[in-house]
Image (cartoon, helix red, strand yellow):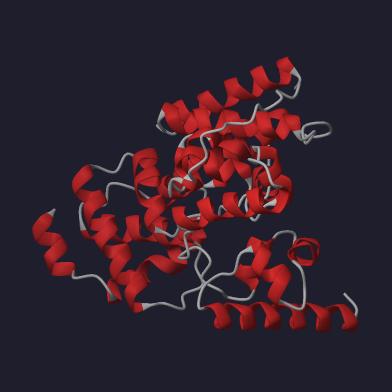
Length: 323
């Protein structure tokens, strides 16, 4: 990257921080377009997605869940702009948010319109998509839901996202199972459920699920980021086979650790895997580092490097009494 590109990137991040400070919250795309020096599209182009720009600017985007009221106001803004009740595709193309978010939050675009005060529901033209590809993707998604013990409702949302990816012509040239898996990840993330992408990649024999997730989030304009460490505790514990009492101890350990180490650089998955091993060491030493590493997607070396840090933040005596 040449020096001018680096300076432009720094300027864009600085401008994003300025607008964030001005509003006291994460700005919408419309607010960026109106108030910032750079447009939302420019941030998409430079950083891959606006979400990535927020993350790189160290803006706490994850904690700024878009209120339902704001999502409904975005529908009204589109209505005022075009003078007609908008369709979901209108929101995705011209609005502040992806139309898919409304399905996650309200159950359907029609229900969101009703919540926004619109009785007239525009007819959505059903776009064609390759039936065999969708069937293959749907099978992959439900297989993952079964493997990782995720509810069918989440799998259903993932299938709808996959169909939207097909409509948007994202499937050609990409592995169907990888794209379907990325849709599954997005659906889980929207419910604050953290499924390590490394485990999914291992399951399907592909190593591009993370890349596909980022690509879909960008092209479908989905403001969905991975949950914090707390969202990974139950899925990883269940994959390993950690019992309910130990899960409670791991959850408490992770919460105490995060409270005391706000600036730790470990990924959420590393944090949880290391906490599980730390608790297990104090309890009954049922699992090896390799056991936990294989079931969490974290190397045993990484667990070995980090698990001892938890001993400084965990009430060891209290844990011993509970186990």
